[in-house]
Length: 54
Ligand SMILES: [Zn+2]
Image 1 (cartoon, rainbow, N blue to C red):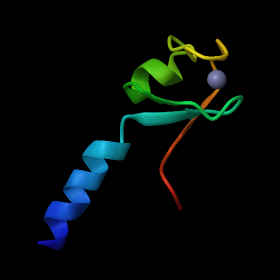
Image 2 (image 1 turned 180 degrees about the horizontal axis):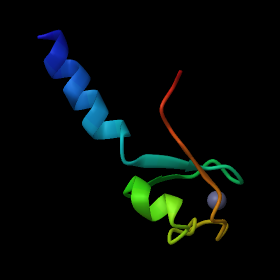
Image 3 (image 1 turned 90 degrees about the horizontal axis):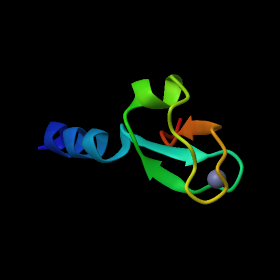
């Protein structure tokens, strides 16, 4: 049961990033973020961090 929840959370958060500039959340693949191909729709910044909590 617990593993199912973990898997669901991973699905929800693994592709979500937060703009470092305005904290807007966007969904995108990590490879696209790392390649700098994604821009924030709100402030047009390319500076994102993963939403994953420590
Ligand atoms: Zn932004």
